[in-house]
Figure 1: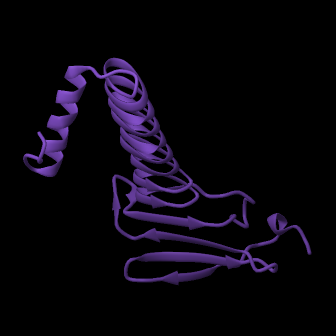
Figure 2 (figure 1 turned 90 degrees about the horizontal axis):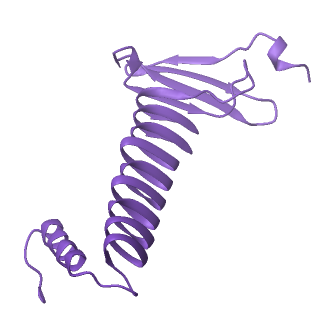
Figure 3 (figure 1 turned 90 degrees about the vertical axis):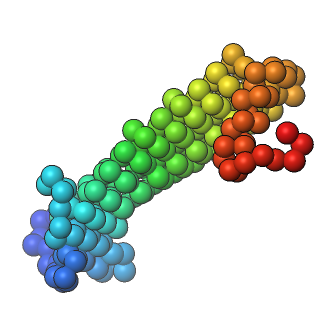
Length: 179
């Protein structure tokens, strides 16, 4: 087999009402696919989807769009193994507003490791409000916690108890039995 990087790549191009597909099938059965919507906002396609290794470059293409989906993704809403955006969802989800993933970073973060500025929920969590097995923040609810107001196995701060009870009421839309 020759070096595909030196050969002209023949993609299967399919134009639909929504956007354009560009596909390539390697001789070993692996595939490459990319979709870009026709509609765009500020130069970014509304939807950009990538899958596999680009035969022209031998690398993954970063999906970039308002909604970006791919192993590597960047956009307003980014979904991928590594995702960066206003909202980032992925194994590594980095979001200006929210991060969701195994490792999540953002103003609001939800993940196994959740590094949040305002709120973090995860096994290891940080944030003004931090909930986790191990957590650090201003208001902390954790098995093992550190911060200004902590409700944990080792420490019960009255401010923390009142804060989390009020938070539960706000989240459930009313009073709970036992409050």
